[in-house]
Length: 299
Image 1 (spheres, rainbow, N blue to C red):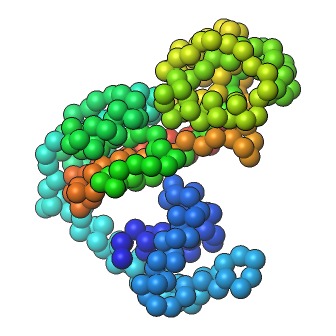
Image 2: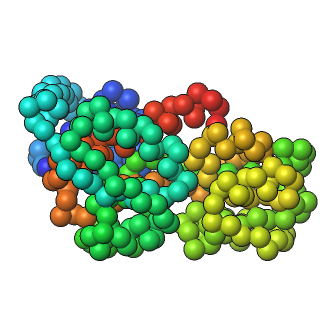
Image 3: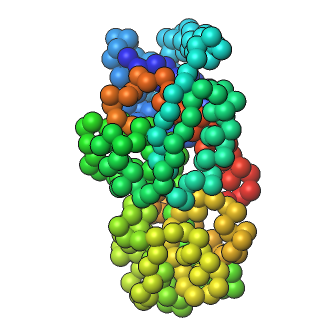
């Protein structure tokens, strides 16, 4: 049984619901539910009362949570003891849109906590970086996770989920998505990327009238064009500073909004690597802080 399952149980007990635990752990509610069922199978006893509309933790769940909370805290303290030195070099790939959000914080944390661990950084698209991890050319990469498929030799560590949004010129007054597409040209995000494929699928399903031939593989260029009144686009905004540089109107797509899952992908052979565990810890901490800042800013 993986220790992560006990940490997830603790998040469920603190948050009160599977959904709250999922948001804290950057997992889907179904993934949290699966971890709890696996934990119940391992213990041989139910941890939740599922007879009502909402699952309720049993007394055993609270006992296991209290026991493992203390044990996990002690293990974490041992793992971070200065006498346990983590050193070496990791080759990390990061998609370009996430570099401003991720790299300053991760590099700072690594230098503070693990001065013997250095990073060699590469940028690229999700598909190329994932292939480089699979081939052993990179140790890890922060990428958009495909909705299906993938190699059995890879491990996906969910880090952050982001809704795609529609960006429109700041002066746009149209009240509906359909009206915005009728008024402005559609500036596409590169359809060979996961973001572009998600956006194209949404438009093909929900927007009848659209026009436009421009297509780019970077958010800065697209947001700048939209800010200048040259069209609308559907993408995910990784760095809020981009919208301060190029003001746009942001329109949420509602319940049908495509969601991009950012994950740290590694080879399964490296799952027990202490340097990779240290990197995952820093990436999770930085992205969680970035998400709190976005929520506080109203994005």
